[in-house]
Image 1 (cartoon, rainbow, N blue to C red):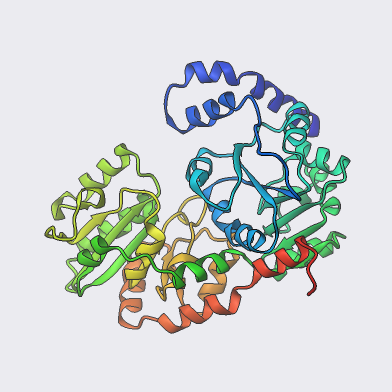
Image 2: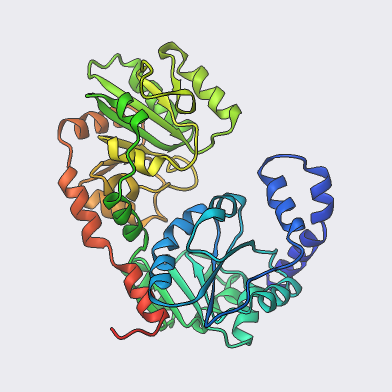
Length: 407
């Protein structure tokens, strides 16, 4: 498997220039073009210490922000961040606590050697699921300490299969592996991995601090008025269809609905407008606080959802009818209970939220209607707030270990 992996990525890397010519737009074009343009790694002169942090995408970057900010407040060092996907790369450009941002080249031996030599890090952090064989092998060969943070492990993961042994052998070489939950810790220990630390999920820290520094939004405030506000956060078609079913029931509750789609491309926005045409949805980007408001508004911008949850009463969070649940901790931090679909096995926070009676998992449109009406009638706001407070603190554990601070 290792040799097939290396062969396929080497071929893919060689084909990037051709792909850039053939692909003229879209996410794949951005993915390819960004790496083609990044021919040289230019960094400011190195100071006391340089820490390289790699994130797959925007979600992982949000997860590691509390660690970055804590490091910067406690130590004079440079933070270099790399991304696999364009969304995180583009979003992070103006983040003040990062000194440089790059795309991670494809994981070939040659790319790994060149990139690590150019970055010249003293310590490296990978976030959650990032296991890039050649980059890790090169780092370990150079005796550069590598940390894995907010990791989740399950017995059925590829790493623990007979085909994943070539990656599994890397796990003992990490300086520390910080895991989100005890199940992950037990999983590693059962396989003889003893460098794991139960820290929790750094996202609890991120959403907690976000809730303490609320960014008010006059447009959403005017839209909500005195009504109950349902927020469909990071929605896909499945969640939008649940909402359509609910509205078709002719409910009598004065409910306002904010749809924040995961995909804000013009094509998908047009699909939403067409789907809900009978109630004339409004586009956030076209509104002013003084405008007259409809029952439904579409949040067609990036960067406003987290603070929008401040105004919510209930949230339907997208992704769990497909491959991955989006962030349920953002609404919970504002006291907003959540509803989501059935596919949450990879997300320990989902089961924790259900156990604490601040979340409901649904499979059908009828179950969604019942869950929504139940949470509107008996909102567990205080339980949501206590849930976040009781689970925060992971960032402090990670930073103490990373910076060798006294416990």
